[in-house]
Length: 427
Ligand code: URA
Image (cartoon, rainbow, N blue to C red; front, side, top):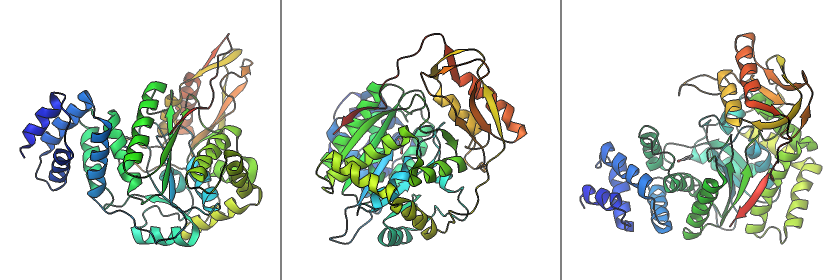
């Protein structure tokens, strides 16, 4: 089939057949369809959208471009959580071992920072010796022996996404709901899952700034999961301020370990447990949300989840007990009295990047010791000169970091209305 006909059909708002989508994706991966033709159809999809059937077909073709993890018959259910990314989002580090203690297996393939949001792999690499480049075989072994793994994607997992994402990045076609849904779902379904939960964030520190766009993405991914036979549910969660108190790399590992020891901040625990409840229910491991919550809490209270995390870290070559350096702290003070009225969480993420805790260029080396601690939350009353945050950075970057934090935290006379952390469930 002539790729030009397929491009023009989508350009004119037509619905592509499964065959047409398959030929395009296969041809692109094989190098028979040129980048400029893929760019053209990506833009046509961006402008015209895709039906749920087309999105599922695209996901299926992308998934088929690489290997899919296979697991033994009769083993414990395989589950995973995907977050669209946020500031201070360390849920994966806490949730994966908790789920593994509930007789679930978690083959979590994670990523690095995207935009202003931090990456799970970057955080884990602040643990001495921790490896995030496991082969599929090594990854499978860790899942079977420990129950959970958190590692990076290998080249043979969804090569179509690797190639297409790089192209979207330079053709202004990243923010397309069907392209995002197919990209995320193909990578998650390659893990060979029995159930998936999605944390779709909205707000100033999220990829999706509005509730409406987050809801649309959640619906598209949940529907794609359903069409592809993998039960998926989603929670829409608020990202108008950091999750937890600590943001950075080493400091987020520290906060995750504290959470596994029963000292997690309430917002982090609320989101972590709610996502875990979804998976315990959808795999039939718990009959009610109440029972699921009890099971998850028990993994913390008994110390089992903390121990599981240490085992996973050791199986991936890391030493959780080795000290993690945190740069010296300095305070950001309130310029006036009032209420914390708004937080530009994206600017907070950029502050961490500025302190070398995230990347400005693809091959930048990170300084895992930098970051900050939020001392206030939206709606808090503050006095003039009250500390709002601690910035952890060497002198060279600390002042710029403090300036960005001060600019990101808005103080006003009126107490703002703060919405719920978990807005709704899509499933
Ligand atoms: N994250 C992904 O994995 N893919 C996208 O397209 C956007 C965000």
